[in-house]
Figure (cartoon, rainbow, N blue to C red):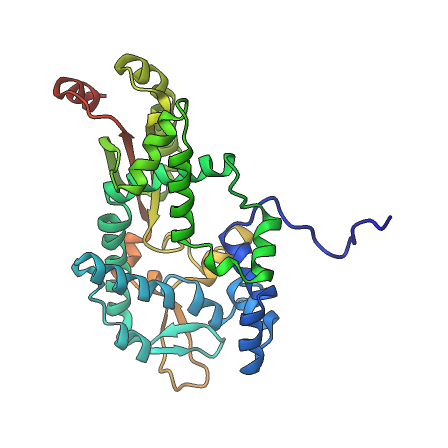
Length: 340
């Protein structure tokens, strides 16, 4: 009997977003043929996306100011009808260049536009991605997908890899999951009341009720205080569930931390030695300090410029948390919950 080849890594129990993306580049036949047609190898593209060899191309894919973030901001602003996507993207792209050390950067004329982009992204997140309806439904969706997995939905690493190989992964989209949800709703038994309620919440876009929320902009050093507060809320759920007669599984605690930049300006990018800051140091927005035609052109991070708004804002983050429940509450009970 032939054993496993030690030179071939086994599939993980499950892929996360980044490793699945790399696997798609590595083995998808359609992507491979397109890359070959245009003279690229899979290894070249994978190294850019995974930052195996960080360079200016990697920053175009993943950084404080990358193509995806520029597109996302405009797209969500248009779809949601909010003004925060009104960033001068064309100007930013025309002012993009590379300094003599190979760093992707912007000319000094684009400093204000970059400042504006990062601040606009903050407002976009707080108004769209962190909106109570979006957050509430996403929390419920996590439980629904977990329930589908328990009922046979196979998202293991081996299955995902096989779907990429045989070409069926492209059909594993929102509609495929919605079909599984509808089938699970039809098959739900008398003991599946909570799961049925959550399925209906997602399928009918009926978000759980927000009963408490907290938002605070504070220094990045306040992580421990924030996590302690979240932990206290989580520990309080069983007692509140008993007091109000609402099963603990119908309570959802959401938490998020939002940085305006990859690294704070109080941690000098030039002085932030060590692996802990390596990836963040590589992804900051850089501004030329010399003319872009100079042979020895230099740049430094936007957050190191004294007249950049982000120099101050980079040192803080938004700490946010929300508590949701599913049932409609009587007015007096809602007031009691709010006081908690």
